[in-house]
Length: 129
Image (cartoon, rainbow, N blue to C red; front, side, top):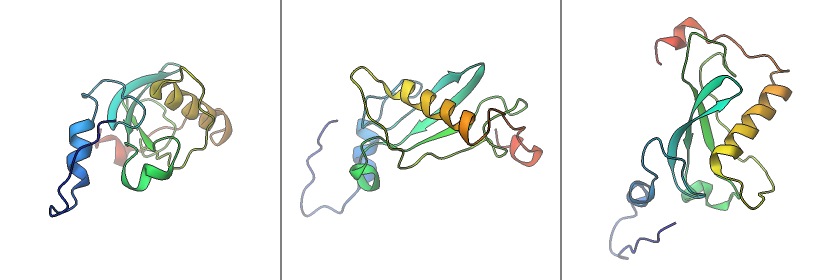
């Protein structure tokens, strides 16, 4: 992550460091970068929005991320087309990338919390996507 010097007289603006250090849209970020990209979990495409490790997330060893539905007319891991994963605890191993991490967390969630079954996205939420 790039350190951005901030004048002590300047107001705190965490959005500046997020914007300047974010990965380009559609690109898997490096650890600690904000980014958005798409992964496939099985046959299901999932749009991932990953937070950086700045501010509230700074004390976590992995960033928070949110899976969003890509194909709202097909089953997804939530009825709203959205899910948030904050404070996921993981042992990071060399070579693990943010996209593989997100895919594994989602796969584990589907097997556990969803008992292996995806859910249809409710009509009221489909229009948002």
